[in-house]
Length: 263
Image (tube, rainbow, N blue to C red; front, side, top):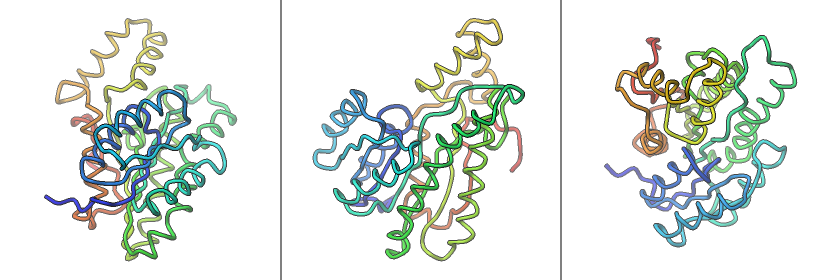
């Protein structure tokens, strides 16, 4: 199947490692021109070098903290100056700390908003005009299954990622007919550095070994294993493709069957 992404300018947030890096790699495999964004440092430089070896001349790296006001706009503008206005935007980034609801303060929620919702809003505001004038575009947010099925001890992630879903769902209705689609991908337990951090937190909270935490998570996943970053990326790339034009406003769980709800 031709996904129609060759030569398309794509911006991927949080792309120095994990799910963002896997997405960047998958888009490059489809012939896209990819701008990777993260806060910078050696990880971003290493990611760019690795991707550049596979796709010479089709990778641009931007050091920008998307959680800071103006960070997403600057990243978009730098991507546009290099490869043209990004017609595919993948909003992705780090998660907030794990906290139970009773312990989360208003300051915690404000910071979670800066990490999770604010960058999506700013990216959409930057990217949507060019997408609408072109008559085609894709906005995809990588959230979590906790947006669909709140997790104990993850109130910040569950609340703010659900807000991202609500924001994109509203845009999908309001901008219907523009040629731009807005979707979320909701990964389950996936083998990333972030999951290692979360496992260590759960192990300390529940008084068990990290290995036992992973065994518990795998046991709760019907396919019997953790997800792979490239499996999440495959879903993102398909939603970004031209054949996926009729998929709009969905929150796609990519979780090995772990979600319990019907919707």
